[in-house]
Amino acid sequence: MIAQDTVETIRKFSRIMVRELGLMNPTLAATTYSASAVHALLEIENHKEITAVELKHLLGLEKSSISRMLNKLNESGEIKEVQKGTDARYKSLQLTDQGLDTVKKINNYADKQVMDALNHILISDQKTIAQGLKFYAEALVACHKEKALQLGQNIEIVSGYRAGMIGRMIEMHGTYYSKNYNFGHFFEAKVAASIAEFSQRINRDCNKIWLAIHHDQIIGSVAIDGEDLNNHEAHLRWFILDEDYQGYGIGRKLLNEAINFCDQQAFSTVQLWTFSGLDAARKLYESFGFKLVKECAGDQWGKTVLEQQFTRKKLE
Image 1: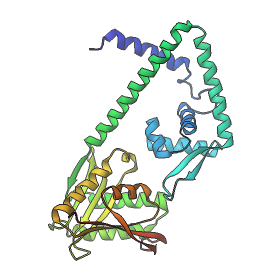
Image 2: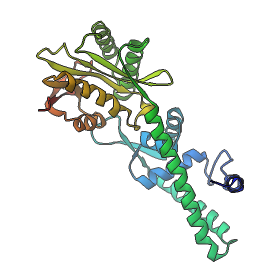
Image 3: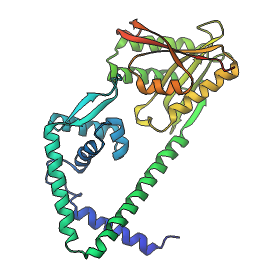
Image 4: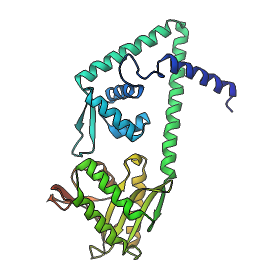
């Protein structure tokens, strides 16, 4: 059992550290930037290659907050975005020459701040303090990871129609693909028409849809259409997950439900159509046994892209 006086002592001196390190001020480390922006610059330098989504999870910030902060750093000339692989969504954040100079100044300032404080501490105690801070920081990180795991576990996966489902699925697709790939009304209208049509057949034994729910809000979806391809083939459709919930294993849970259903129905194959550049999704598909079988230029999405067909054959 943890003693209450230990808790109170840690809290008391944590507050003092926050004040003395300047974390209460609007700017930090002799820069014109907030504490979150300074930490972002340091982590971009430490990781060399990191995406906005990865940085969001690392810093524990909301999507809107990280977007505003990165826009400011980009406009200020501190960072730049470089496309990572072939996936247009995944852009690596890198420091510019100006950013490297800024981080150097931040590190010099922080080093001096630490050394000035250590000069007031016996040499024999300095390593003890460093080790204690390390253990405490690692414990805080473990707590954060535990909460993230709990979030993934607390997402409810349900099957079948749910009020508002059609509109929400259309919204997620329209917003996501407009933001990341500049797809327009043609794509959104096509998604709307296909989901509306499928909803009329959703209760047939060979068709099924799954939704990821958090606080009664739909945050993800996937469906299996067992009719439109004929030949007892399944069509995996409308797999999408709200960006705020990516990275917690929820997409894998949705796909797992869909693939288990396909195996139960003994479909000869499961087909899905996508386009080149969705590297993260492709990696997930391939982990479930899908293989790329066809690739060609097409405009069925309302914009010319390199279309791809993935196939998963029935397990023998």
